Image (cartoon, rainbow, N blue to C red):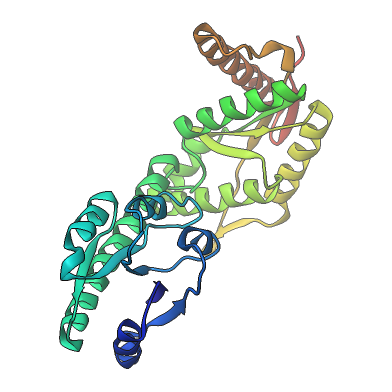
Length: 313
């Protein structure tokens, strides 16, 4: 456990050092340094503050507001019985607990066990929160963005690109023998194939491009700062990566047949004045943007397997 000590004395430091091995403590001492300034560059799990005259209870709330920290540290205040009123104000302002001097080593151990339980619970909650956010945004089979998350990302990126005057592109990949493959191999095998299929799509794009599962058999890739020519190169790379190595299950080969449609968005088509009606207009612009790539996909499919079509007005 990483512990930062502020305004400490030997009375506080010595018992902590004596039990540091038992609780695996990494103790950092602050010497005439503002607590908030130091915490901006570090992430202790616990902050112990010796409450002295002249201290302001707002320091506790200030520590809780530091954005550089991945989670709020447990703040333990130390004071005498004469400073209980001040300690109470500190707890009200954001501190988690306090302990009064004099205290025994056993009392300190008990307090640290309580702190450890609090930290463990908080870490568990953070991990659960991250998983929930991930599951809310990702398609569970392919691990790419789901439709809602993809549309949100595209709207945000469209706004940024429009303010910079950048063109953007939408690529739709239609797996048009989806039903045939599903019926032939079954759900379990086909889901594993879809995971690898999406993985190859991700390897074909730039790190800052957005990819999502738009429909059951269709994926959409959003390319910021791109014109049709750049998007076509990405589409060609997708075809190459899909064909470079066959998808194999036991002794059977899974042969995906795809068609790819590309559409381009002019930054002037995006409303950027920030008015309430602009959000509705941009939703319509996004829908039209995607539908144009969908129309191009249909045209590509009519020409055969693994074809690319660019939408033209």
